[in-house]
Length: 404
Image (cartoon, rainbow, N blue to C red; front, side, top):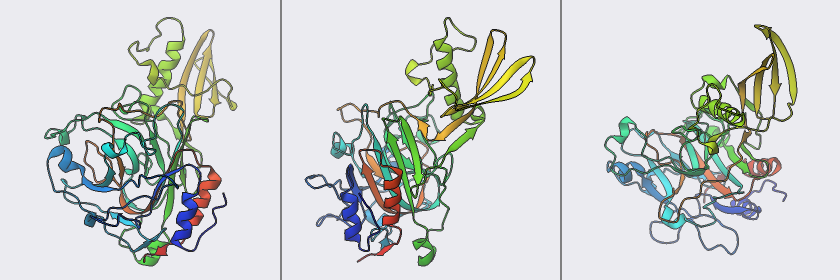
């Protein structure tokens, strides 16, 4: 489909709705005609569910502290990529963390509830980043069961119920960070979920109360794609992904656990119990990207009589030391974009558990402020969009439209 820039919001919306695979698209213009006039989504022809967004303060619902959120807690810009935008503010009240959500009771088993084996997904968010690198949109209930100072007074304890979500950077602030989970909880025998990517491009920080001309020039198209056929999770900004590597991952919090998962997988493949092998390490958490044939091999200076090579594969760079029959392997770099992901998406049981779909924030134990800035559109697709399609979506909404 040729998604050329459109001059009216109706034209832009039509082109997005016509894009194959669309599940839901919120432009923050379309609302319910009655009641509290909640924001609702544009959906493909024939789909009845409009995915109305409820304002919610998760601190109140889980800790019993603070007040209820209302739509008035999301200031409107009056213009945006599709004619309107909402603002996520740096809330000073620690008991107030407003977000927009579709509760699990209205979400479970809908088209938006993307889960299970062999599933692909794309999340696109048009945003201006003021600060923070946390959640933009997705199904990503991080749980309230982690042992933190904030959880001492918690009233409602729930394990993680993560599926898929797009973040504004996390470990690389301002990047497009795609996050997926195979089990809803931690990864690599660790309390946090670690399957995530980081685009090479990074969105700048722009004060949310900047002049209109500055804001209008500051929109970025954040996106994440999970392509199950390629087994790749990729982050994109303005249709560009880039190749991002993390050097010395063993020394980085979280990624050291990925290194251990990689190492434990190799140990397990060898006969007998290896030195350093953890026999209790869960087999479904090994992390062993394809390393059959290196893309390049570089000879390094010998060490203690051992020959040393640097072998680069698609997702890892490995230092290999050979001395006689002894072979030592060390992961010296890990590819963050794209990230290798060979699993399905966590599938909550049909028992009322599972996370909500949220925009602006997610439920999590630390109760931090998270992302602040403007969000002018959110779209979810049940397939992995191509680079060409993501560039077209960027161009489609590059020039902001004045709200009516």
